[in-house]
Image 1 (cartoon, rainbow, N blue to C red):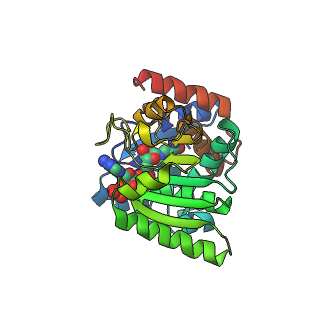
Image 2 (cartoon, rainbow, N blue to C red):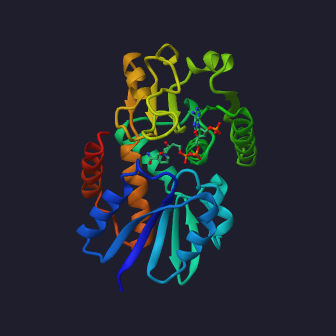
Amino acid sequence: MKQFISLIGYPLKHSVSPDFQQAALDYCKLDTRYEVWEVKAGDLPSAINRLRQPQNLGANITVPYKEAIIGLLDRIDDFARLVGAVNTVVNKDGSLTGFNTDAPGFLKALREDAGFEPENKEVLILGAGGAARAVSFVLLQEKVNTLIIANRSLAKAESLAGVLTKQAANSKMKTEIAAVALPSANLTKVVVHCQLIVNCTTVGMKHSSGAGKSPLASRLIHKDALVYDLVYNPSRTPLLKVAKAAGAKTIGGLPMLVYQGAASFKLWTGREAPLDIMLSAARKALVSTGG
Ligand code: NAP
């Protein structure tokens, strides 16, 4: 039987996941199609129910459903539950389990592609959505010294900072955690001390309302900082351009995208993903979309 894996989100024009996942499935000679399901919020429950059909191996979940999906699944893996965000769903005999592969994908790219060791570092996270939750929880586990969550909606930053603070206390960790508004005078004061700045907002993402914009001004970025933009389309985002202009080191979202996709691939198929095939297909797809 031909099998299917789907990408569920809205909008999905920017995504290159179908290109590199299909390239990996074809390379491994699996009779499986990676499909795009652009789903409006009201149709999410019925789309998730469709995933239970035997021909569906599972799905990737992307913006804006990584948190909303949780109540629609049968089981949530422990780390995904802690993070409160699911980006991968596996269908096993009609039962759906949610996982989070964004966090390990982020960390692998941070260490292996940017050569950055997070322990004892001062970190600023821009955003408080699903990706920000994954990144901040994994950085907490890696024992960073400070985690500052900056978000357009301050209440959402405070709520994420609150859950992180509880988790840090439960695990007897000394990480200092704070929330600030993006932008704000408080952010301007703290950003200069940060050794790692991670953009987990959609600002700068092609086809989004923040396309063409940077979430931080160049003057706020310290030259010794590493600026990590999760946005991967375009590959040279406005934030990465202003960070380079400030003399900072940079890493874009493409390696993370491929690593999280490779971890999802393994969950669906049980096989190691062909990373080189995925990376070159993702790069090619980005170039063809003008990214
Ligand atoms: P999400 O849950 O929808 O969260 C979006 C975040 O962006 C929120 O913090 C939101 O702030 C903020 N935001 C949106 N528009 C904004 C604006 N105009 N000005 C300031 N802030 C704005 O999305 P997500 O799943 O976390 O994804 C966030 C980004 O990360 C996306 O670009 C996604 O493609 C990227 N991502 C990349 C990878 C990768 O592998 N490279 C993996 C995951 C995600 P409010 O709370 O105030 O609305």
